[in-house]
Length: 425
Image (cartoon, rainbow, N blue to C red; front, side, top):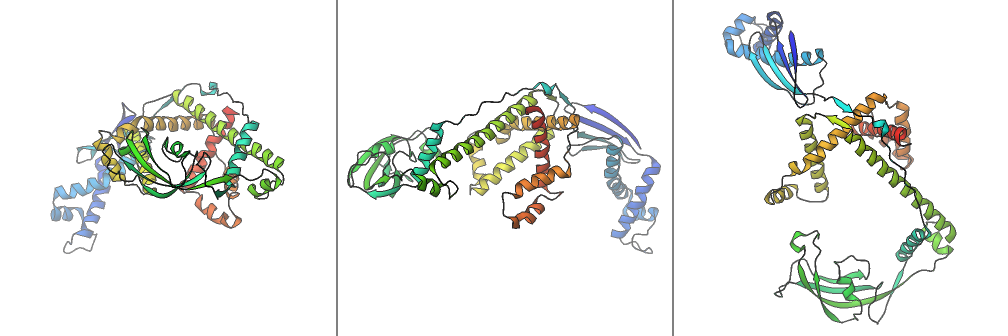
């Protein structure tokens, strides 16, 4: 079998394969066996009819077609293996001669990666601070969670919990759908309603009615109301005053679940936790900056098929997310199309960037000879298991067993962590 390889643009190659008569004989025998198992030929056992008899029974065209069907995939696979070609797409095949079989296969391959000196990438560490004010804000939030409420007869003020009836009307006085509620609970100042609504409740007394002329935000989640002017008829039904707990050791022990025995210890724990969280967040930012710089240093002629596959993946992930939230994927796509948007086109730049990063990292792993040992995986699995009761360990081991998708994802995370440790410290 003669094989020639021609490099083409966009990381594609054309493989030209010419098979010999002797190679075709093997597939003729197999074709005769396959056909004689499917077509009854008098005088011969199933699958045992000779080639000339099978040809006469089904015709030269049908016989040669069967030969090619058997020879083509195997010849293609052998050619790829012989030339050590790593395909990343299905081949486009063109048969130039039926017998002996000659064909061309155009296929996208793993592209070459030109990676500039990434060892010079520097991402500075940022100073992490936790102030007394930060701690006091957490204490205040915990205090509000432990607050109690009691009915009062005075005018409503910020911090009160109230219950109101309301209904929204357009400029013509027509009630708008999905803008009304009865005995709706609101803590004034928590900003759970549209801007201006809660401010309008301040000063109202129980039983009082009031009109609020408001404008919905331009970025409101419902397109029908974005930037819309609405008049709300509001009735105050109930006003409750918030009573905050005393900030003492008893409070500290309660909100910490018994971990902190004193208010001082609670504040120290909060400061430590905040520092840990902010440090982790800062490291995530540094890692993202490193990856961003690494992507800029990569020059890659990415095959179109790899970008299209990444777009498919991104769309499928988006669909799964919408499905989990009860959203109608097909309806959303129809709305996008009606608005003149093309989701695939919108995702293309991000997909290309993601593929570039993945290929750049692949090159780093190869250059640095970064491997993940079984012991590395064992350590990571132990970390995961610590977040669950002991009885879940067997299930976790099964979830991350070799060969599973989770195992591959975790292995890549470990490999990437090794890169971060080397270059970010």
